[in-house]
Image 1 (cartoon, rainbow, N blue to C red):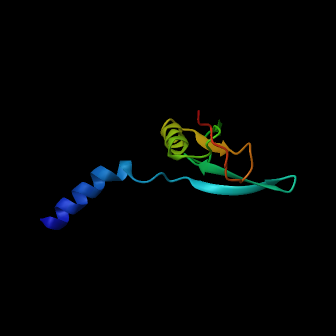
Image 2: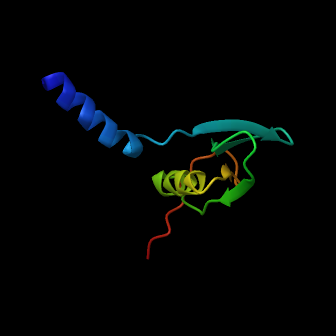
Length: 91
């Protein structure tokens, strides 16, 4: 019975599992960039997702997953390069 309960719980939580995309490093003019690829299917249309100043976060990854569920492949494109933002946007 315990195994059956565990399997039942697993089947309920599976749709809420970790996002299945992957970080992708690429180069443009000798500079490294890091994007995020999330695939719905081989033949799905592509959406380019542009993330904001704070970089790629779980928010963008979740949006990618939501677009996958609607039948789109998603590439979150890096516009700034693979760098760490040290500037603060405080008051």
